[in-house]
Image (cartoon, rainbow, N blue to C red; front, side, top):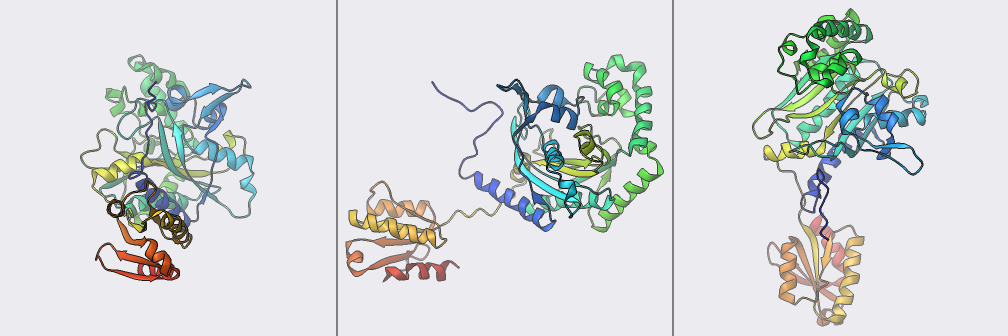
Length: 423
């Protein structure tokens, strides 16, 4: 029987995985500079967590979750996003009681959604996300947005477009909700069944519908910015001012609606302009969710965060021909000539690695010429050659591959030699 990888998943092989390591390292470094700490949560959770945290009117909950019943009869779901799990952990572990507030967290890990696989969208995908919990200050909204923008910029992405909007506070959203119901209700029968179900539960989600996005009522639907109260307007004005002070360009789009039910006030997306991206141009999305912690059983706690797909980021880097600095060179390749030399070479390789250098040796009993070719394929900077003569003299021949220069040195000087040359 021939086994094949499940649809919507991928194997990340050597040669590509190094790109992932660079991106993940950059994510961890920028979070260190912004003082966000890593959190790791389970890959599966109780299904009810995502129904409450993500929203039961969303496509994620209604159509895309991987849900199953475990042997104990419990409904379990593979996590489709990272915010709900992070907030659950924040509540369960009482991080709101820690003296240092707000609680600033980040995560990097696989998520799962059953949707039609396409370029930049997989059924198993990796998200990098941050969550700042415990502050209702609009300046932290700007900080979260700045972190995401700097992450992309430092990796070398160009033609980025930041789009922001305000969904308003509870009062503003309620006023806008009633306006949307009055706007769509007379002709709601012309919309898809999903939109018809959303009319009363969450009419804002109608604006995010992909099936009916060209309907004429979409173009003249009431805009949330027209229903912001004074507090919401002042909040949004501060976010815009801080971003402007940071010299971060943005566009205000009153039609921007995040796909999750828990957002309020600031919402944002980071897109990339240019050819080669197909229909998916959004790289990152996020916003404020002041009611989510209470919904999951915690105290009243404001929060804001974002999540982005590593797969989509790597696709954007490839389209823009951005080369990440992969270290493809091996520090040293140890060549052994003869059975006894092979045993000695294993010990020498061990000591080289123990000293912090990358090293490889032959395990297939190849001839000298074939071992030199192998060293060249590994792009080794140095080759260390040992045979019967070198064993007798307790020496080793070291050759610099780029210049061809070689010399014979005492074997106990090899580590110092590599240290001086490779520092």
